[in-house]
Amino acid sequence: MMVCTLQALFHRHKQVRIAVVVAVCNTAVKLLSGFSTPALAKANVTSVVHEETVDLTVMTFNIRLGGGVVSFDQTAETIRTAGADIVGIQEPGGNLAALAQKLGFYYAEGHNIMSRFPIINAHQREYVYIEVRPGKVVAMSNVHLSAYPYGPYDIRDGKSVHDVLSNEKKYHMAEMKSRFEVLPNLASRGLSVFLTGDFNVPSHLDWTNATKSNHYGVSIQWPVSAKLQQLNFRDSYREIRPNPVTHPANTWTPGENGQIGTNEVHDRIDFVYASGPSTTLGSKIVGENGPYSDIVLAPWPSDHRAIVSTFRAQLAPTPDLPNGATICTDKPAYAQEETVLVTYTSASVSKDWIGIYQEGIIPGIGNPSIVWKYASEGQPPNGTISFDSLSLSAGTYDAILLADDGYTELARTTFTIGSNAGR
Picture (cartoon, rainbow, N blue to C red):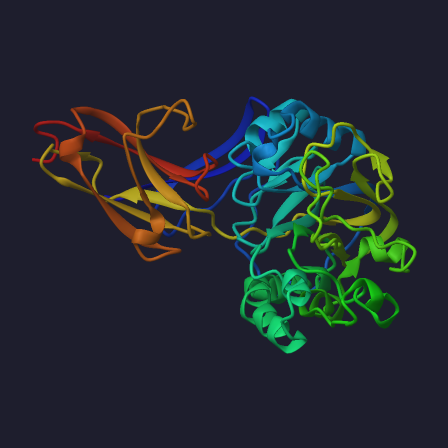
């Protein structure tokens, strides 16, 4: 018999809301704490009825190598001072949970999103839902695209626009492909959708004919921002400050401790985009004491400036959710010489992993697994992985599916090891 456990977890400081149902694998139905049991995902849902609007402040913030290079406390203070409700973090460096704890925020590892409101796992790698009111949500996505090849540096160093755009197609456009496909569908169904990130590519709204003198004599139709505009995503900062000549709004870079290389290229590469039924009310640069910053913190803790935008957003009922992640063992008990077969479903990103723990242990930096493997060693998003039980002494263990090289628990199941257990 295969025993499966399905979980929905929501993190806030030291509290965890958990809904668990045990079922036969592939027939489990997910329960959400505080909600009625949803039906399975409906492919034919085309719209939702809005009953509420709310003002939300959304922030994108590359905190630089975990946020502690200058001061971890100052990194938290930056978010607090900006008044952010929802934050897309880049370069969390394993510190997302600690940062959320300082702010009293919920968090979603794997997505690197924090929120003062509960986060609902949509079981999609591209986005989560933010539960702003009970049963009412917006959708949130966050990205950190490849740093190299970096187009502005290549233009500076003499590469052609053609070569730079070829790299953009090969790298950044490919990295955004699934979001280009998935996020507009959410907006078309009537959800307010927000997309934050360190895109490591400028905007076509900035490299215009009017700004050629600042951009090595060229204007470029940067394809990521152009595609997002085509898909009805709004660049919130440019909605409020449409003139790139008077408001270049460079987020890269204030330098390291104020030290900036003489050959550095300054640009706006951090963005807060919005789509669906929301209106942009304001957008500001958060940074050091200088000409680009609307909100100033000193010392400034990052080598990126942050963007914080405020929206009046319509809320949508929580969409029906698909079955969540499951994990199963092929037997409830094993002898010590037997192989433990662990089957999982809905591993949503390439670095989801399975750890074996003593029963009841909460995974974390201070509670390492006894043995572990990446789920991708099977057949993601569903597969089977084997563990050698000889490495485990007699006792009771949990096999736990965890998200994206972090400690967000997706599902767990319990099994025992004993000298006669499998006979």
